[in-house]
Amino acid sequence: MAEKNIIIIGAGLAGLSAGCFARMNGYNARIFEHHSLPGGVCTSWKRKDYVFDGCIHFLMGHRPGNAAYELYQTLGITDSCRFIDLPSYFTIMDESQGRSFAFTSDITAAFGALKSQSPGDARLLDELLAGAQALRGIDFFGLMKKPQELIGIFDKLKILWAMRSAGRYMSGKYKQRTDVYVKQFKDPWCQFVIKNLFFPQVPVWFIMMLLASLADNQLGYIYGGSLEFVKPIEKKFKGLGGEIAYKATVEEIIVRNNKAVGVRLADKSEYFADFVISAADGYSTIFNMLGGKYVDDSVNSMYKTWEMFPGAVMASYGVAKDYSDKPHADMIKLKKPFNMGGKDIDVIAVRQFDSRSGYAAPGKTGLQVECLDGDWEFWNNLVKDRRLYDAEKDRISKELLTVLEPHYPGMSSAVEVTDVATPYTTWRYTRNHKGAFEGWLPTPEAISARVKKTLPGLGNFYMAGQWVAPGGGVTPCLFSGKQAVQLVCAAEGREFN
Image 1 (cartoon, rainbow, N blue to C red):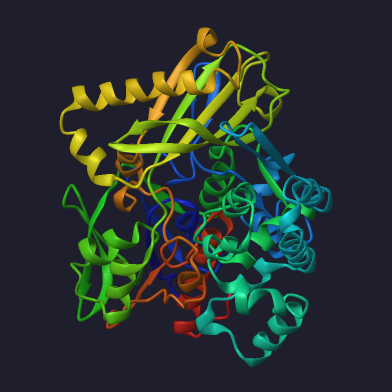
Image 2: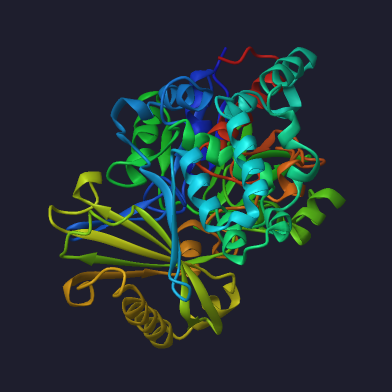
């Protein structure tokens, strides 16, 4: 029997994963990618002696003994990618109060230290710690081995058994948003710390899960940058006989008799296949490439009402100084907010990379500031006048230097390289909707929803990636690519390998 063909849109993590599993299951697979490199939003870039990272803040499941690591092995990632244990989650500080707190992997000690700072909130902190301890050792990624559409009764029983110690902490009050939950805390400082352990919109149990992973030493990052995580998957795909066309922007998904049969590129060339998997931006796929013809109330409501990850401005500095004594990651509440895009920004996140992690030459440090900025319209309009756009980036980079100087003494006079990326930058390279750095925020509504990987009324078509895996992240995107191929195999009555 001749091999059937699958076209995959996007060579990000989900697209590369789908490509690998398509080849492993006997399908010809060809990926069309808008950019000149693989990875999508999972990327890093080199500037002189420095690597600046645009993606992986922490990778879950980087040690053996869980479904995520098994997936990394299958995709060839563990063959050459070097993982680094996250030394601590981050250090959080308030410039006005002069307070700081470090969340280390010894979460019992960390919560003890926080209780000493906020004794009036000891009971609630003990509650959070108990939840995090209860979730330790649970393989949450084991739940992603199959798409929800293919999970049967036996699978559900296995899931219930695996989650038996976690049930109490994943229901009731722990399902509410963290920014709502922390209103019980008496100390505003304690409120600020807890709600900023991730995005404030996530359910409380999500925070507990992260802390459990931290305590289990299952949070890490990538030596040399996020692109080093992507390259082995691309190599695996090509080694399996897959093909990738770069600088090949898909403008339209070709449909005949309500079945996806191929794609039309920006240069008007057409390519045909038995199945199409879109691992591209969800909005662009549904409303542009397919013209919004295959939607229902559920799809429309999702794209109109669900909260997205915001866009981000990332200001990166290559500094000819050694700051290896500083924390890997800081979150700083500023005493004096600064203006960006017409908004006052009072919280910034800082990541520090040095030669030990493969991001800088010896004795030098890469420092990256992230400012979350949801104003896509501001940046999209500003770039129409490139002079104004570049001037605003320059202003931001200089102002942030003055903000960082007290925390990294001598930095201002030692900067060798400056690089500023905006939400428009993200959109230009990835076409991600409104320049967001991920898809749907894992709010209580989104993370508990069943997002289908198909569209109503359209056959031979599947979606993969962060827009069908609320919360996004590296590992769920990789699993979603696998799941898309599992659905193709199920539709054809093939056994999935």
